[in-house]
Image (cartoon, rainbow, N blue to C red):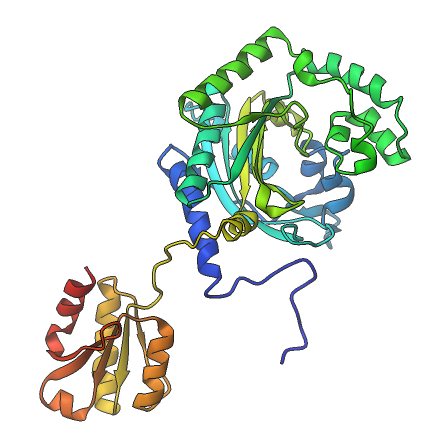
Length: 420
């Protein structure tokens, strides 16, 4: 047994469980690929400053959770804790916004890293699928992304999730609310770290999960009461478009999310079957992020959905995905000539798209058939010296147990016919 183990708070994806993760990634990305979103992939690490500016210096992600390190050349880098800042950086660096076709619509899938206390649904290494629409301020774009996420979850068979929706205002109305909230918060009994947060970004205090803080927030001013007319109209149109699409949501005036870059529309997908880690994904509009990281004004909106938590949500609802069999045909050769002939047929079957495996290692018939059963194959092809002398192989249906002789040169066409 190996003396090495996966680092604390991480996990290995191994078959057959890993097939569920692949299916979830495919389902989440499928509606994006048919809605004009192109795939983007960014490095696993970026400049620390990118996240400090974009995500926010007062956030737990930057102050407590980033894996930051210094290279031999003296650069300060961090493993990416989230995807939006990296994707926007890449889009700006490649001048995608100058191609004349805004918004730039991108989707991504990858691993992210945060130094957190490990628990079910919260890992130090986790997987997300995300989408960003860069360079357009349009309520229809916000609604589109919420609808696509809802569509993805429903295609997986999930039903017991809720969409929480709020508006965080903009540069006109949020400063007024910020001042009112600060006045309220400064009258509370808060620890020194939280008091510093009140000065830097008071909205983040509303997102504090500690009961000692939450019970003091009763009566706190609500942002919805401070929204300017433009933000009210924008938010109402988002709500109307989502409703018209048949997507249910709940207004949540306390929803702020954990990142500093959000403006106006913010939303979260929660699943009540996951306990304390109920958020399975979320996102919102981030109209000022481009300027924060040195780019031009590019109003944008996006989301990220957690693959790990989506899998936990499926388990909580008892949903089993219809995963394709990894093996449809299993070939069992008996003897060296049969080994040569069947290996060639295995190659032919794979070329026409039939998932096929082979009895390696020279096992006898009994051992090879056990492997065939374990593989989940629908059909087994068996051939010995006598079969080949007659120009046939034995084709066994593993469900019915029926077995018949098929011509060696007919086996590919026969299996294509049977497997559709």
